Image (cartoon, rainbow, N blue to C red; front, side, top):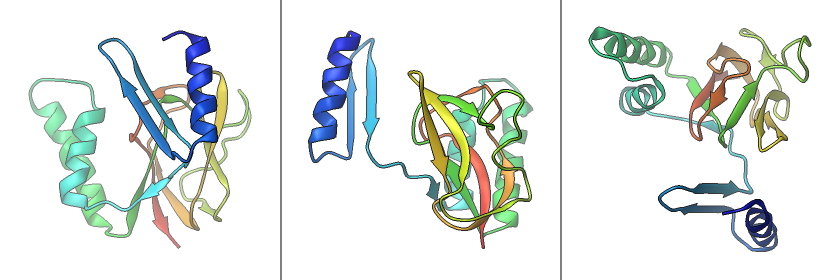
Length: 159
């Protein structure tokens, strides 16, 4: 798929009634979404393990088990925690520009609509906003590091 075909596809999706579109072949995967869904409540003991192991590098021995246990303890210790997941594949940025203050810090209480971070995808800066008033418990995303679709970037608590 070349850039011209991709641009035509984006235009088609924008005009259509679709909210999400996914296309995959052996060497190409395209995912487009009109709706940015930032927060999602999860069941701590079921999904936290699946999300953690999917996003961690493959290792041998106890390292992966320790990460899974730590994440499970973090979530089960506070049933009010909500994972904010990346709605797209891209690069996570905590600030609007290099050297600038981050949008949010751990411990901040933010209002609905406040920008939490930017995820750059195909040279487009996508602002990820809070969908509800919340307290930033943990910033999981690392500045300048790629994130996958559905990867946890923040742990927050509704206020």
